[in-house]
Amino acid sequence: MEITPDHPDYDAERAGFQTAFEHHPAVIIAATSAEDVRGAVALAAERHLTVAVKATGHGRSGSAEGHLLISTRAMTGVRVDAERRTAWIEAGAQWRHVIDAAAPHGLAPLSGSAPEVGAIGYTLGGGIGLLAREFGFAADHVRAIDLVTPDARLVEVSADSDPDLFWALRGGRDGFGVVTAIEVDLVPVSTIYGGGLYFDLERVPDAVNGYLAWSATVPEQMTSSVGVYFAPDMPMFPEPLRGRYIAHVRIAHTGEDGDHLVAPLRALGPRLIDKLGTMPFAEAGTIYNDPTHPHGYLGDNALLTELDEDALREVLALADQYIVDIRHLGGALSREPEVPNAVGHRAAQYILRVISPFDGGDPTTVHSGQRKVFDAVRPWTIGRSLNFVYGHPDAEEGSFEPGDLLRLRELRARRNPVA
Image (cartoon, rainbow, N blue to C red; front, side, top):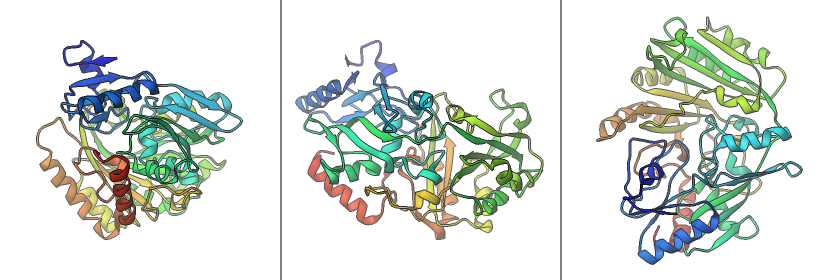
């Protein structure tokens, strides 16, 4: 369906999860099929318009100011092949659609912390998920990609059909056309040991350092993180957390010895909330309890080879007005996939993320404050993760190995000269 600014559905179709940035496309195509997407790309060429796709995840949609925006939110189809342990996922599907389709077969996708994130954008940007240390990046497990090329052809891209483009799309994400579906591996996981431990940092000031020391001792079946933030006295937060500066340790473990492994964390001190136990993977979204309501924010990240106590102390002192998220990497994330892709910086052992609420206006002050945090860990920084860059003009800067970035740009110049 073609939607122009005078159409009653215009605002709904252009809106996304990220509310800090708005764009006003000349026309929106509300696609329901790959053929609709192909027709939209052809229409844009006919009218000399550039093309953007509305993101279904937590990032910012491609800018379509005055041009053509493709909305794929109606394309939520998922087909599971239980025998092959694969899922075919349409462009607008969120991870909750895939999780629900895979669960009856005792299978799970390599999804992230928020089930409401769009599966395709997440995967093509790399994908650091709940089970990442055991299984690696989601991009490492893509088998095939359905793509509308810039010249409006619908093609299937695989390692055999087009190895260069297959390499680029898995991790390079943007600028090669419009992906309408992907086929990915599923893993034989139906239950996990997971949940969260919440510490009051006034009562347990060493909780974050304790978490870092503990993370260096765990097996690959344990994927974890710690979030640090102030919980306002508001109903959206559980009563024990309100008005406190919190360290929230999140756990996802596929082994049998979860209680034994987390015992050192519990020994750090009293918990405001202790919610760890065996759960169906279908309930894994409760581990992080990420917000589900649209809002505005800016965020950036640094991939680190290590994070020592002094640097961490400086980070937390600088970032008391932000949400700080530290995720443990390594394990399978450090290994190259069987079929190479554009995901780089695999030597990173942690990712440090900083997120700030932002309601629009000039982001300069927020960027400047976040930059001070990342300056504190500069000696250990080897890059950033493309998926966790929110609201910065050049998300690719530092997101790839230098040679890979050059290769991506050369491929784009050949495959999509107007990108």
